[in-house]
Length: 177
Image (cartoon, rainbow, N blue to C red):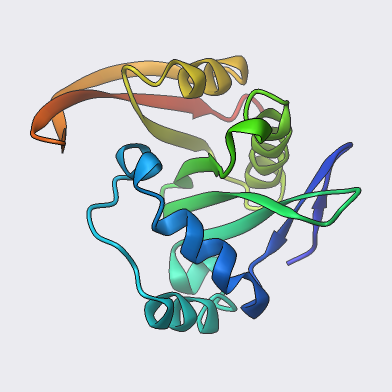
């Protein structure tokens, strides 16, 4: 996979050196609600995951990329394609920016724009979707900026800290096909 480069960030494949970065994100309880995580991940499991990160999206049915700053090459987040379905030409998409100081800075918007373009031009996908908690206004604003539309709400869909929350299903149809 080639690097997807924007004005201030670039997206790249995960490397073995990303172990501590991925470990920190996966074990940050503050974002477990948006990442739908329930248990901590060990370094061993993440190491195994990184060893298999070379798999083609058609084989793994997912693609996880590091979001890096152009000026420092620092990894600041992750953006994922999941449930890749080549027959129906669709995939789910998710994004997480690690530190609060990097959120609301345009990094997520630039990253999502790059990945949408990649999905529609290189992977020839017909549609993308995102599952977003109804209270996650930052993510809703980000995805709707690119034309994602809420096509339904799943009531009491996720249980977090002994209460249930609703989740919206957002969809973007490729305007070029």
